Length: 231
Image 1 (cartoon, rainbow, N blue to C red):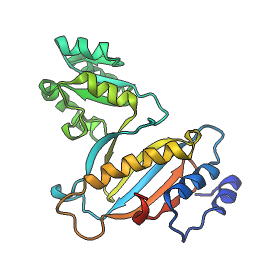
Image 2 (image 1 turned 90 degrees about the horizontal axis):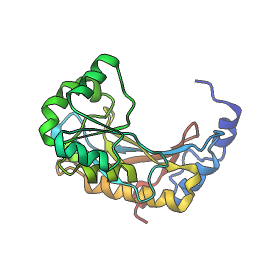
Image 3 (image 1 turned 180 degrees about the vertical axis):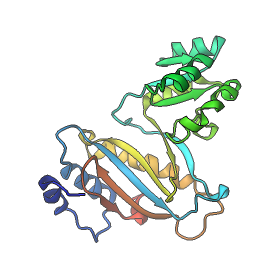
Image 4 (image 1 turned 180 degrees about the horizontal axis):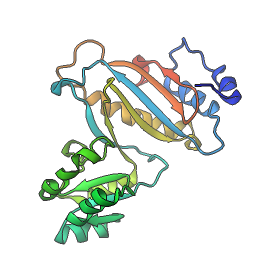
């Protein structure tokens, strides 16, 4: 894929062979953002685990202290009192079998996160094939299968993100917007990394944090020194 002039010029500011300290890396990511819009800063974390093994899965959720800069639309599967609670907590959509039909028949995906009460998982399970690949399937580890729908919605609206390994053992997550500035982005990064480190499987052997790369939307990647993430 051919890179534009702005990208090429921005990439010259980054030493591809260097592992940067966190603050330095985040400063560079902001300087090398080439988009006209307020770009998202993303973290790409390669772990020394094998996601093919159940005992080496790394998955969870964390509330970033400064959010992501994006307001998420939340769909809640709940009935009766829990549906009322979800609406009061600010859920964008609340339903049960009707929402399943809407997704299956109308190919409707006007939402960014899904929460379900435990009793609704039998119904939500029918959507596994469509929600799973999109990373939208409710999961107890991520706090999205819960009776406390109010808290789940509040956390998501406050900036809760889910992290999980892809097939190449890399976690891809947003950290916030370029406009946040270094201090807020660093806070979010450290909060994320603390959660990922804490989630290290007992079955993982050798080096856990293999590599960490930060980048803005359409900007060049900047490598972070994995040994200095908590400095």
